[in-house]
Image (cartoon, one colour):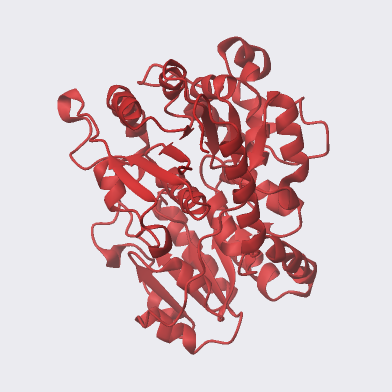
Length: 467
């Protein structure tokens, strides 16, 4: 009797990783795959509900996060969103201690494949011991993975030779043999280099973790498609000398609409079609007071209608301390600020939304472009600057101008917003967006890539038959 393919998913404890792994789980389940989704209890509690059509195929498995001595992490600090940036290295220590319980889980469940993130590099050893193939799933765009490079550029000797300092990240790498503007600026490169290339309290750098996984995994799956990143996908397979499979962009299911009647939706209902700028920087980006105030100043200067999803920053004790004095009163006739959680996909799908001012994170790019919104990008952390460069290079976004130190002004925000939304100079950008939307909004296209991925997994199971 035929049995279902069974995969085990292990994402890193950051929601920019957990959510794409969850979305890939849904795509796999819709192709008849049994999925064991492994994370910590609080992270699993914060995931969306499993869609009804795959409820019997996706199984959550929670592994309690080990406690560290000295209460470095508070109870419930299980994801990067729960802690300041400087504590992420300690979350990695706690996460690495999941190795033994994860190994026991693998032995008991005996999956056909493990689909793994790069932070838990120790999964490779577990998989090899148990003769289970491993697919590394990259939640980043292919442009970023190509820029970071193959394993020999990530181990210690390769870093000394090819990435000796942060300045080496400000130019196109030597292995990229076509024209590309995808590179960091100096202020961005310094923080990325420190976070990715330097050893942290966990005893191993992020790029060394990635190198271990890339060198030993059986295949690489990427959240992308040839229609958007064809050149980069081809090059990455050449660099790795192993199979690289695009699994599609995994766009979230479109909201059915009409379910939320909160104040924000009532306000949107009264606006002109495609006139409103959605402003949102997610929960991982910790905006400073100066940045919040300059964004507010830019929205005011632009004269455009806006809906700003803004979480209370840690530097503000009360919500009324977040925005500049008088901002709400001066802009209430054409804008609304929503503090706390909002149903972002439903808002993006609203016909009044016409543009987005955001950080250019890959997941947000995918969510936003499927609705054809004008993109104004203000990258802040990790991969966001590289996504922003590629979007601008493709003529589907404008990036906010900044000084050499990375600072920006309200005037810079306003100029970019008006260019994208209403100026004649922005006509070409708005025209280009129509072609991009056909790719990002084509759910059938991306389901097809997920199906091909499943076919490869089925055809390459070790030591067990699915027949």
